[in-house]
Length: 116
Length: 114
Image (cartoon, rainbow over all chains, first blue to last red; front, top):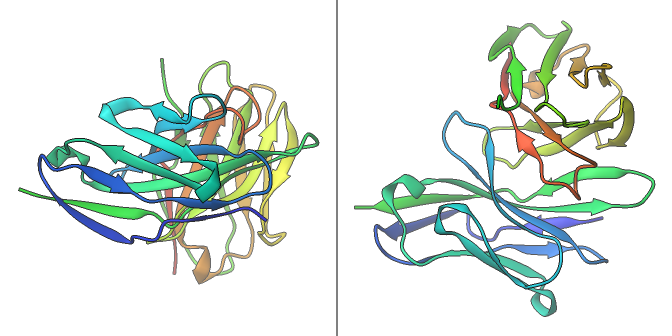
């Protein structure tokens, strides 16, 4: 069964500093990988996705992520964070079995705190 | 364009009762998925419906059921509510099967079981 691990429950970063959120997945075939952000009281917003091709993926709000097959990782990065980036971030993996689909498997999330 | 809409926003029920949650997908989207998000956890997949047929089911008991209507809107039903069913229930729609096509999430329904 597929799984997603986000090893950092909380991360604190100073405003203007760079950010990297870690994500490791377990899946037998080529995964479909996603990063979502959830602000308090809000639904999930898609930041970026990887299906195939270039392993460095650009997303919205200045975020990017790099797929590394050898490390089973899909880490999210941003060169300079803003106070408005404070939120919960979820990594997710999807699968398609041909006969059906099991939706997305999410990690437990990383809570990002921005220090002024 | 309107995003995914869910109703109601909040709901309080008593143990043993039944609840129905509703979701309207983005226009043109034929797939609707349901997720349960317990406080402090990531969303867990419950169901996916595509073209009105169930196309995926997560590890949830038979008390959970869903259906998709001809206009692609969907209902999630939960019978015999337990305290542990208290959670944010998220609906997501996509053009095609979830896991392949990106999903767009609604704001959720917050269910509290007392």
